[in-house]
Length: 182
Length: 196
Image (cartoon, rainbow over all chains, first blue to last red; front, side, top):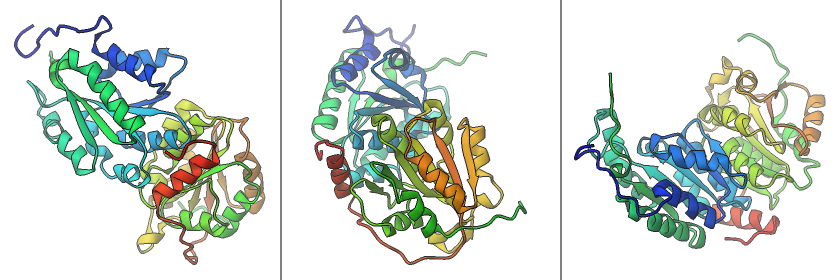
């Protein structure tokens, strides 16, 4: 516990990953595709444990852009969980979302932006919001635990009710910088 | 790889594959597979891709998981499939019973000048099988295409990947609509869904 690893005060007893899960459940999201990230681990466990959801591990993030577009074409609500390093992998695949329209929703745990030890994470940590905007994806952001639930609800509404492409960035302060121990 | 295949006519393969497609949804990989499917006649359940290279099979997976009672057929090329080759493992993790991926393999990038593709050395059916798709086939005869056509409209088996060896003849381009919004609207309507 230090200035780089603040102990967050949770606004909800479920914690912020629980708030995202509850928002996805309330919106009847069925397909949840992901490339694993430590910051998403709790949410990914919850999705796997829920019989009304399909958890879809991906080999690379752009698969999730195509998969969630297909899910929606077939009548399912879907979203993509990834970390910031995966956003760059998605850039060309966003042309599918732009051309076909329809909702796109992703929750991105940020690395490389706040007390990051690993410099290899920093380029995409810096570039993630711009990469989304470059391809016309609307960006929302939460940096404090109490902001996550409202950001999730806002993103869900814009995506599934408005048919927008939306990314909800989950700031690294929420997750804490990863500690590397020899 | 020096193994000699009987190479089939791509238009004849796709025409046979889709002749009795019934309710099947067909997702096409950009380039020649899109034209091949369009050449069989337009259909509200054709989802033509003109880009999104590497996304055809995994987009079809998203549809297949959403519509488990509807057969979903991805028709793509070897170059497009190579760009999304991890999709085989992603599909294998889900084991959908209603998804068939047909890879039309001429061993080259036909849209860009006919450069050799990695399928000259890489065995896509072998990669699919090793990725966990038990029913992965290499096809070089029309009898096998007939069997594949039956298999592809079934929703009772696991996923299937069929790599079909086709000749390198360039065929007339049959260009379907490039309007992705229109494609998704009519596909959704045909499934009884709202257009948006």
